[in-house]
Length: 485
Picture 1 (cartoon, helix red, strand yellow):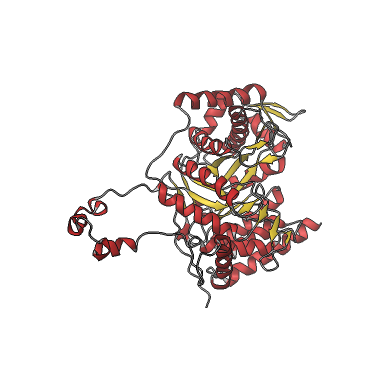
Picture 2 (cartoon, helix red, strand yellow):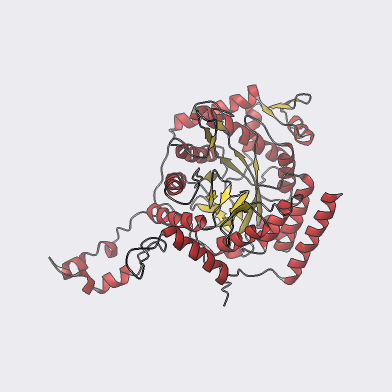
């Protein structure tokens, strides 16, 4: 019998925190960003965006599409951006309150290939993959919101809307998209979100859809992405901007240089949104990569890479906005040692730096390839870090002095009720150390795949109302017609 009860979220709630940059370093980097925006500027080919910049005091070269923003204008507009807000969900129990007390993590997004669930052959991703992974994400307590993990390549002209459709129908959690990169597409997406929310007021109070727009490094803003962001912001939906400036190619060959380049791109975009819609919820996502110096290949991670992501969190907070941190990104080709190694430090560092949200679970090959079981393996790492970040209980009950006294030297703690009660509270991996009947232990990757298939066979999230499903189908049909004309 299918289970349609979505387990409660288990966000990371750190008991301790860290700072990587000193106050002086952070001030210097912000000054560098303000200098870049004022003196060098950003490329912005959107006529609509350039007009907004110019109207609010930026220096705009309409012929060359370059916008320079004086520091005072940057600071004034960023002062309107909200530091805290809520990202809503289909089920209010899964609303995410971005108040600085917890870190909520999502899947990675926009992968283009999948290891098939049944044949285990590599193939292009499709809408059914988006739907299946949404169901798995709905079941996992580590996943607080869902970024469609792969693309719906079987619907090439309207893939972003089909990804939303598959997501809304298969999870009650918040949905974040990165593929709504067209003004007409944005209007259809808002219409779909309004169907799920029920009315305009609910959609604004508890926005259940957010948009992440990638900048074009170095120092470029995407025309369609920015125009989509303006439309969603006007509708009250959170919009964020990500820079993936690549150290050595689309960014300077120094970490600090790449960080200030990427930060300038993000701040320029957020300023535009505040000019157009003061107080609109925005978020900041700095996920730089590194160019391999011998091959020119893009690396999602390197030994310095994990340090750059939490610095991105600190920069976001210095501008007064929440952060979407880079976590779990890996250049690993298959589930295993490399993927686990590269995931662990970035998640821990970003959580301890106070990231409100993060994304990156479930994909391999520099965020392009889905192995279905990788999400379960990343979830196992997530819970290890969640427990470690929660700190140590040193209460009198935890120190157990009376139990130690009652047991005495060379005694057996298994006799004590305290031992039985607290051992039941201990949390252990359900992937590792799973015994074989004939001795030894199962391969954790095999256990993860078995559990993945179990979820698909047994978990069915709370369905949409029939009227909502009909409306989504109608919107998709209208969109297909509109994009064919």
